[in-house]
Image 1 (cartoon, rainbow, N blue to C red):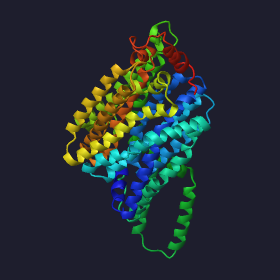
Image 2: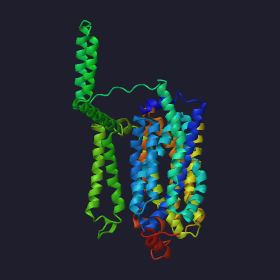
Image 3: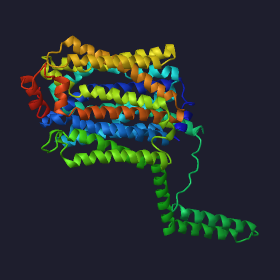
Image 4: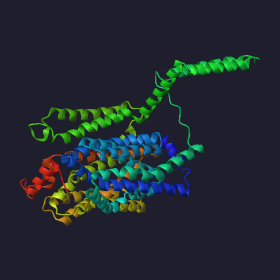
Length: 545
């Protein structure tokens, strides 16, 4: 019904309401950008305050799991209910999560708040892309979709000053807490416009009624017997001749009907109806499939993080049998998920038609490896710069945002090229080649002796290639499916992308890999003071201003 509601709502938009919708999307995009440009730095100092800076990667892995698995759930909610209902749902998670983080008294509370907030954060990202796909044509979709990232250009500089000022004057708690106030204000115009359009379409009768659903075995039997007995009694009464006492008999039947509504049978029927609704909703959302998917991903990714901290006499912590068991259980769970989706599920999370769609699969694989390579270096890049470069706090944040600005600028350029050339594959291939070149150059610039221009060049090249690849792969995947599948198609592509980011963050927990990425032996030995500071103080302790 969500897709039909969207299609009906598009028929009632006027010039003022459509501009209100675009303004709402702009405000939501800006707040999403400001969040992403500041809160990642607050996490560094939040974990450092409790002397648990090394847990950054573990927290990000947990967040990545929720962000990834939450996308199909939110897409299902948006398709089953409406876009406005989905926005309200993610807003509640967003605000509650940030309130918990701002008032946290331990790293555990921070992690719990981040997990709750991650549902709202991923929902805001996904729903913005879904709404753009709803209201734009394919030739404009790449440009409009990339324009929603344009606030990152401004916030790369504004966000640095905001984060720096908040950390120096008020602390990281206010940095998180202010979003619990700003996000509802910024989303209010968008939610109001969507709600108005859906209500207007319903009043005008443009939304078709939902199709009747068959009742599962054992549910609704009482109501069926009641309907059958009532229809049979009405048929017998219609054959009888009118009686002068018909009015009194009608009143007595009304009293008996009222008495039957208070009977245990009526309450049992209401209970069966409630179970029926829960059953149908769970079936539409494919709760079993979502649980299997989430459990499988969590069991595969968490051992990669926990292995470095596990109590074991062997290196990497793989001597702990629980980690091996968790990894094997995750692989088996994912295999069971695939079998369940293909053989059992009536409304699967991953429909069989997606398995053979090479545009969707290709976009997911590209996003997976793109985000994996990004987080392999970016997770501790900020901490690396703080230790090895004598820059100010604001300059550190400026450098961390170089790739984000490049992704945004060249993403918009990629959208313009798609609009003018009506092609996306050549732009996609060029973007992937440039992205690979940027990653390769970074191998030479690692270490404490890496020059500043070379470090900046690696970020620009990766942003250029990543911007082209991201916008073209997503639009190409959306173009290969019907409008009813756009939401789930977008969710699946972003799901694979987020899983790749989680893998990259998980692998980064290895101190051996961190040394290889940032401090190769020919550039900085493990006995160097900067290396000792980074590991003995930053990664395993605290990182103070």
